[in-house]
Length: 254
Image (cartoon, rainbow, N blue to C red; front, side, top):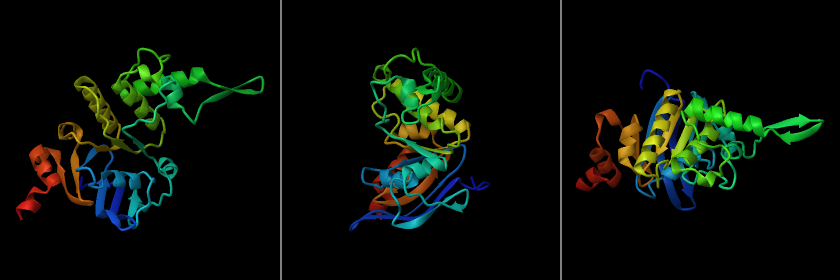
């Protein structure tokens, strides 16, 4: 990774909520065509870190750079504008709507008929089908079904498709994408993550499953008590080593 510059670089990130220090002097780099996993126990600062990365929170101290240029964001919309988005564990899908309606929720495509603006349902369906197939290799059995009738992996695909439809997307954060999925659905979701990496996105994966992390991630960023206690390459490490960093085995031994 040393031969190229990161898309995103975070340096000296501190976040305080009143007297509570949620993050303390955290650095993070994410590269194009890479999966970076962020791991750590509950309360380690993972969620706070990705909320800063996606513009939801602003850091108390520290700096973020995009393509080596200073980046300041005051909202998640600012992050989307510069090509950073997230798919959270909740997916934020409207279960009673079909996949195409979810894909374009809040940014529906329209057409004019006799001077009247109408929803262009046909184009939204075809675009949904195209993005699912071209970007993710997913074909839904029916685009007429309500989203709540889809499997967990298919719902995940719709949420990812909504994010990647943004043509300038460069960094995608995925928060616990395999939580509550069975083995087959988990395998499909990990395959989607690999596909996004191959398309040149920087994918940041938050996961409690070290098996999933070592299946798809290139590097692992370990958080403990609000600090980054190390970054390792999966090819040169093991789940045991990363688990030891998460629980502070070396620290305890010292």
